[in-house]
Image (cartoon, rainbow, N blue to C red; front, side, top):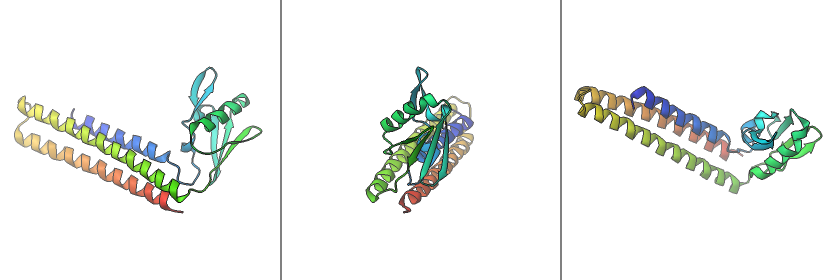
Length: 182
């Protein structure tokens, strides 16, 4: 694994983590909370975002407007089964989700979940780092690079890993602050 391939994989871990963290409810409505919920429509399973328009008219409400009105019941059923803890209200052609304020216990649970996801990302990054360093060591023993070149490239790997870890720390701190804000 060369440096550019490793850097790309590190950035993919960060992107994945951003997506996972954005799905954690912080007491405010956001489309990410429901857009990936799978709905049984047209004899297959599709995310809500593929069958409806998702809007956030205010910080405590999500509106889901299916493109095909026959999918209203399917979307309602999928939201109830998803475990997000919000009961949908069907208002004709629109499904409304009212986001309740978070309790202190729920905030702590979400922070714990977020920290688990962050730790999983760190483990992935350490695995990528290990593979990158192993590849450099193979290059050195195979005669592809001199020891000085390998040392320089190892320093670059460590610099990239530090950059990504710092980015993850920043994401984690921002989300924790968002979750703790009442």
